[in-house]
Image 1 (cartoon, rainbow, N blue to C red):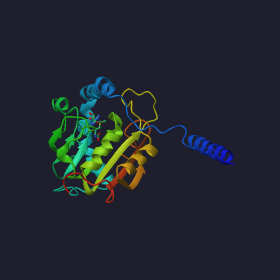
Image 2 (tube, rainbow, N blue to C red):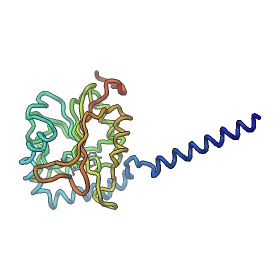
Image 3 (cartoon, rainbow, N blue to C red):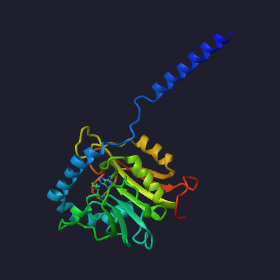
Image 4 (cartoon, helix red, strand yellow):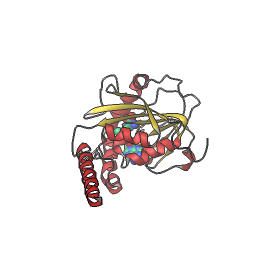
Length: 247
Ligand SMILES: C[S@@+](CC[C@H](N)C(=O)[O-])C[C@H]1O[C@@H](n2cnc3c(N)ncnc32)[C@H](O)[C@@H]1O
């Protein structure tokens, strides 16, 4: 009798495992690429592209900054006196219209600063390193994080989101705007994000979704490139992981 029950239990467990695998197939990729590839291929392409073709965008983007910031729900003085961290600002000056001096994490900062048309004057401090690396002095002190069209240029999305959640004060917010590409094997964007996987990562790291939308990035563009652009307004969960240092 015991043997029959055991065999039945085994069969049920096996059937459940098969059902789970079918339901979750194909497995969701949690976006990352090898850091060596990012260093030796992705970022050199990024820098080359800004150097050769960046002038026009660096002249145009500050002119559309007000439109884009209002579209994201921000007013000119929304962040006055606040600590705002921009991850991957590039040289374009996307936040130009907003009042305030902000901080940034931009791994290409030193090289971009040498471009005569770069617009990095908004930032009083720029950490020239990838956002996957933890910066201890930012833990628990940031009011607002911006990640505009840079998450899919990085090498490990989860490590960045983990840091974003740690940097935010309780109640702090993040604006994440990212392209879900329609192109496979794009050397400029080797890392591709999936909205469903991102939502799970937000939840895992205590970032509550306040609002989610797609499209409308600038007065003339509905996406940051190929495919659909997703925008998320997030707030650090009150019941999320406690900050390890400052309040
Ligand atoms: C397409 S640009 C986006 C520029 C700007 N945020 C905008 O609104 O247009 C992507 C930027 O992300 C930066 N980036 C790439 N990998 C990164 C990483 N691991 N951490 C932080 N920034 C990164 C690149 O150096 C580049 O400046």
